[in-house]
Length: 92
Image (cartoon, rainbow, N blue to C red; front, side):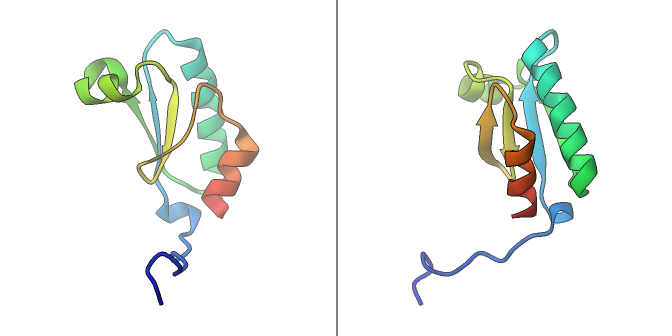
């Protein structure tokens, strides 16, 4: 079977990693952090926060979109975080 047609093995929420990319003093980042923290606590997924002002590569890639949420290193959303969509992505 073609690798493109194979289903990826489903990961449990605890095996996922959510990364919130933002910066201090950003009210949208604070809102996003509250949603990410709540949803990750509900489903048991780990999460981390990265400061765009401390990482040149993150700044170059995401400065126009913060806050940015990654799930397993892939961009999930930016600006506003929909808790239901994030939950579905983690439980998927």
